[in-house]
Image (cartoon, rainbow, N blue to C red; front, top):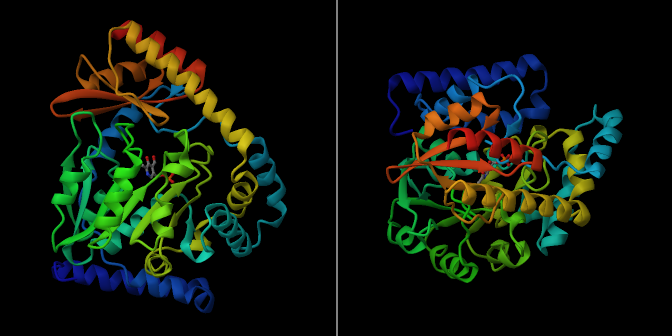
Length: 397
Ligand SMILES: Cc1ncc(COP(=O)(O)O)c(C=O)c1O
């Protein structure tokens, strides 16, 4: 609160009263009281524009009604699985009930698979609310968040909207997170080190042993947050995950999502794995069980570790990625070899102009500026989507 001015303080108080009075009107005070107290305890968001999102929206607004290829959000068009879809249908009759029991079931399944305790797991509607919780908590008092640059910006952007400072550390010459340089930035004001592995948007993955050593060393000084949204696209997720660091009682948080290989981006389910006291602390900033729908949780329980589906979606993604690599090479372009379901490649024209021209042709993509160079990030879609990209790309490349 120390950086708030008088208006912010007044807004804060009004907002807290509003939250409390709205809940009273809804008649659910006893049931929701814990959550209301939690919400009222939240710091106030600074009114800062989120420019990256605004740019994205301006491109999306020019989109044709029907896209031939939706390749801007790293979704997985091969999901959700038939089993998950059936579970959604079967859950509808019971969806007048709050799904607390089912959330406990999913935590139990995750804990059993990972060899941890359910107390190490916090589930929410995607990993985004948990990234937000971490942003709020670890930026308190003006603390800084150290991230790679470029990397996934959601957590540090939110941290800045609260009280936090964002320290960006450029990636190495081979577009990997620079762990040594990130470690060198740690000081007494560091609140969190955020590592996205594999990294979005570069698609690169860190050497597992190097990251494990980093976590063991650094987590003694500061909390390390490992965002493993894309880990299911690696050949050996179990050998790569830093859940091993949580098991070794290190001060490490691992975020996972069903939005990628499971194909649940629109269903919304994700979780973090961390020390029980960290789970308790971060859950203060979430509405947890009241944030997840019964059909989603039913689908997640039914589809969790569904090997046949996961392998099939993985193989189809790899085939589409190989087709993309061949297309780019044929057109005289290079790319960063990717460990994920998206690929970054350098452009030969203005990035915004490129995505606008591709959008006019029914192909949705995203552009980046990295060290003065324009880049495109393309998500891996179905083969027909990659062919639509290839056809449009030939016209303007
Ligand atoms: C690295 C990374 N983390 C987290 C998320 C958020 O995913 P969700 O909220 O759908 O779980 C994304 C989404 O694209 C992402 O790329």
